[in-house]
Amino acid sequence: MNASAVSVPMVSLKGVCKSYGPVQVLHDFELDVARGEVVTLIGPSGSGKTTALRCMNFLEAHDAGEVRIRGALLGYSTRSDGTRQRESERSVAEVRACVAMVFQQFNLWPHMRVIDNVMAPLTIARGVPAEQARARAQKALERVGLGAKAQAYPAQLSGGQQQRVGIARALVVEPEVMLLDEPTSALDPELVDEVLEVILSLVREGMTMVMVTHEMGFAAKVSTRVVFMEAGRIVEQGPPATLFQTPKTERLRAFLRTWLSRQRQAFELPVNDGATA
Amino acid sequence: MNPDLIIEILPAFLRAAWLTLWLSVLAIALAAVLGFGLNAALQLAPRVTPLYRTIVWVVRGTPFLAQLFVLYFGLPQIGLAMDAITAAVVGLAIYGSAYFAEIFRACWQSIPRGQVEAGRVFGMSRLAILRHIEWPQAGRLAIPMLVNQAILVLKESSVVSIITVPELTMTAGTVVADTFSYLEPYLLLGLIYWLMALALASLGRATERLIALTPSPKA
Image (cartoon, rainbow over all chains, first blue to last red; front, top):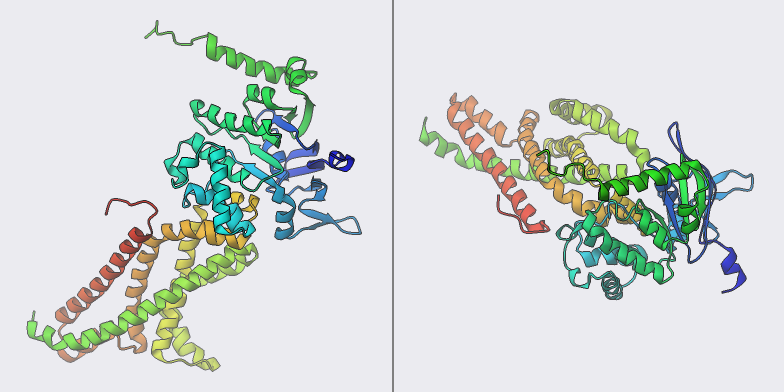
């Protein structure tokens, strides 16, 4: 790898601000994601994790600051007088073509068969010939263990399978970065593992990822860096071992305590042992 | 009730029914295209929202009869004359288009935003999303409501009798004027409208079944 490839981050957010009406959800948000990194955003609800993630592919237009994908400005260019100019839909699409996304609610297209869902980014958006796209889509489906479900409709699959189709759809465009927005939050507990399994295999292959998750154990296992956010700001970040074992801020300690005590409650303290029934 | 009278007026009624049918079907088709276009413009360019709202407000908020009078009697005053049948078709098409547009808009709104976002993220243009993601779903959803509206347009076409289009309702009026019998012509008229409405409804159900994604039990 040459020096320039190392120095240009895959995703870079600088001074990004975002408000919804009077509520500011991101304050001067700064984050660089290097090639091969797996960055996990954690934090309480409303801390801006998902918004930060959605700014990385311009699903949310940032109010100020810069978002860059492999060095290229996303969404806005800067005029000579320093003001920003909104880029065309097409140029946004070009810059983020190497960024794929996996959604909390899967967001599959229910009127298309599984194979067509996975082909669509190639055929409809990129003009890949159908037969070539079909072969690539089939390969992506096999990659997530769903080669046999190509002809099914999304509604005929379990939540875990639907999310794996969502991952296959993201993989088919051969992305350089994957954004995962709470990929297991909408799943029944027993379906979570099959999805985490697939994500883990992508991590092992060296995929660059930014993930929002509440699966703290999984975050600890796969992340190269964990970013703890609150109220639109990064409170603390670092390798998972450091962050989870020696949190520096009281706020993160409190967040982890709440999480740990909930885990403990779930496994050690039956609230209703049947005695009162 | 005079069966002989019914037999006597039947040929004239059938001729008139044919006129009612084709001018209604033509108007419905035009209204559907116009309505689809109005909604598509709204979806592709949010800037047209005020224009869209104005059109829907005016067309939906005023009586069809008044619209028809403006079209047929009013426009000639500014040099835009058309014959009665053209005015009837154009009037019904404009009248129906606002309702069709709102049906399409409602069906478009029912598609989860996340599906559109997924389209954008994977590089589809707004037009491609409209065509490949929204339309196949919204169109299917719209059919029962479109059929409903089509039947309303069909029946609303009776109003064009007032501008001397010799369709079903005008023909019934003529028979009444000649014979002073109300029962036979209006029962026959009702039956013919009902049959045409039934045909539209059956056509709609057949279409629904034909394009259903998964076979559903026949309703």
